[in-house]
Length: 105
Image (cartoon, rainbow, N blue to C red; front, side, top):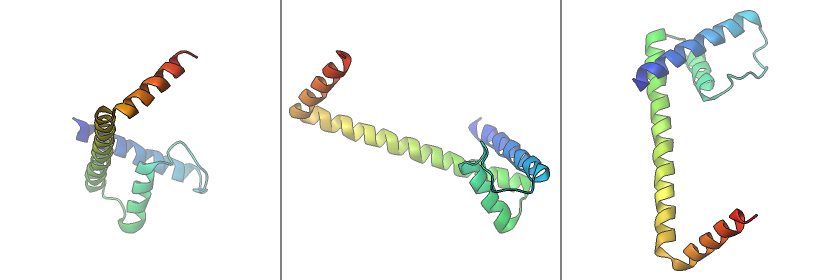
């Protein structure tokens, strides 16, 4: 399931952070892991420390919420755009012209 997958990803990221911490005391350098999940983990560690099971569950829930909120927002936006285009023939003509111009180059 998705929640289990996200827990595994959280666990792997914690292990990666621990490895980086042990390999180097310089935490200012950027790496491929400087992303939302790492920022959430660092914030959790700095504020409360890490309880592995609770942290992974909590972060998995946060990531699911962010994913679905972003998905829902995007789908609503696209629906509203399509509704606006369908409602206004002038916009339909402009879109058709732009699509034709783009495909003929």
